[in-house]
Length: 114
Image (cartoon, rainbow, N blue to C red; front, side, top):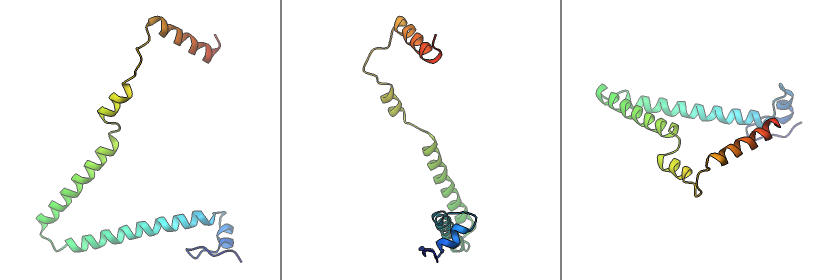
């Protein structure tokens, strides 16, 4: 008989079932537990606020949406202006036209062997 894992799955049985590794089953089980815990938490919150006045429920919903939008915008914005400026702050002069032509020629030779 196979080794028991912390979620109670038998490794022999789990490996035989559709070829899924025990670790993958345990990971999926753990994720399902997190989702169920979150759903339970949400249900508890909704139960707590269901007796609130409608105006208070709307205010809560608006505040939650505002927070979610703020987080979403911050995470999707990418680098700040200061970070971009720092990236562009090169300590050497830009190449002149002749140097640019040389760089292009070298890259064409490297890429196409011309």
